[in-house]
Image (tube, rainbow, N blue to C red; front, side, top):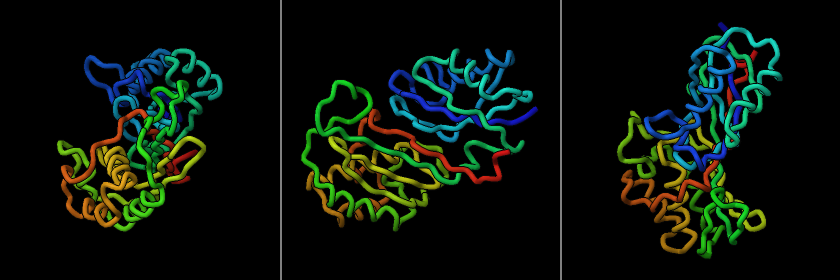
Length: 248
C-alpha cells in the first residue's frame, strides 16, 4: 500500500463542515465516497484540519492509502467526475508512508473576507458588513496576536483541545477594492478561533474597543470577554504548508 495526499478545495455552503457526522452532508464523507468508488474499496481520509459548517477551503489536504496510482492526472479526472460540484481535487501527491495530513502540517493560513458592498455574485462567500471600519485600528490590534501564545479567549468553550497555545506567525488586514481581507497564519488553530478573532477585531474597527482593550481580551482567557463570532461564510482555509521531506 502507498500513502497519498489529496490536494482539494471546496465551497462549503452546502456542507455541514469537513468532518463526517450523522444526518448531515460533509466534505469528508463525499471525498471518501468518491475515493471508494474509484478505488473499488472502502477508503478513509484524514484531513489537515476541520472546517465548520459553511466554511470554505481554497487549499485542503487529506491523506489516504491505496495501491500505487499509475496515472495521477487520470486519477484526478476520475475522482472529480464523481465528486459533487462544490468539491474539486487539484492534485494527488505520493508521500512517505508515515506522512500525516494533520500532524505533519507546519503552518495553516486562513483568510476572512468582508464585503463592503452588496454583490449578488458573492452570496455565501463574504460577510456583507454594513459597519464603517477603521482598518488601521484593526491592524494595530491584530499585530498583538503575534506577541501572545494562549488564545483561550477565542476558543469554543466546549472543546477537546488539551491546551490553548498557538504560534501565530502573521495576522493583518488588507483592503482590495470592495473587500476587507483578514490574513492569519499559525501552527495550529482552536475551534472557532478565527471567527472569534474577526468578530472582536470588527469591534475594534467600529470603535467599541481599542487596541489596549483587545489585548485585555487576549489576557483574560475567557471566551465571554471576546466579541461575537463572525459568520462562517466569509472564512476560507487558504493554505497548508508541509515540510518538503513528506513528499516523494
